[in-house]
Image (cartoon, rainbow, N blue to C red; front, top):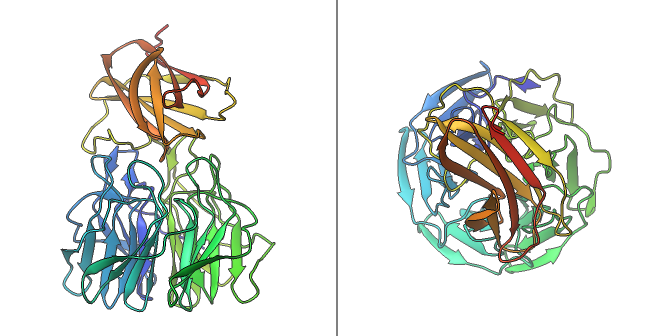
Length: 413
């Protein structure tokens, strides 16, 4: 069923539940070009959101678990576009925040799951590239330890723990979507593999529900609506793809609510034309979610240069004209132009590439070298008024380049 929408548009907003309420926090709101530190509580009975004490810092694409009346919220991108190693701890009873021991390294886009008083953090993006690390946070001792690494580096998978085993499904290795299922045995500190995921997806929602791993949505550059269900006893994936979400999306999370439903909120409709969402859905049993009433808006993509407090000056809408001539590197580039305090600003989004970094070119001139993952960069051009900019991105130091995309402001020629 479709529930009350989020108060703001958001990608990468964490979501957890104590079985009575659902809690959601952080997120990037492209309509306001803002990274949030909000914490929200959803009342399943009244179908309404309430604001709680905000977290100490802004974050999105962080991860969270709930344990003994506290929410543990870890890592993510911060308000300046960097990657955070902060461990934020929210006490539900007192409506207050504290911090725990920081992650050994800054991480975002990772898998995070709770088992027996420990929080496991696997894979992710560290600001330079995807990683294969596995860390465990002991809640009692407020300390981190390093465990056996994943068989490969990856980010943005589906995940969850069932009976002492951590499941890491699909995701992205920095260039390609993965069909892998990695299984970590907590008792033996070892990894094995399970049945391949039927439809590889990047940044799906996921949850453990009735002893099975559910993956829903995800996918680059256009996300899907299907639900993929893994049975760990049979080591098989259900082929049906049901129940389907109302809106295909990625960069969002899910949480079980008691034993009867899964809750998911926010996300992004596509990486080609970024559209953040407010939509909230609840899957009851295995029934479809119903008919949605989403209110999406086209918004820019956050990067290391995001300015959370920036406001836009109303101007004629710039146009982006792609000229798709991709090279053998299979890098696909898209762009979106807008104004920030009158300055011509362009969000670039790409997928593909084989190097850890990419070179960004504007009008044939190299303007930046940035990490290939997460695949977006904001160019504040420093110019105001009419202008035309042509962009491409290339694997760093090579001529393995994307298609060119032209963005015009105010009818610039």
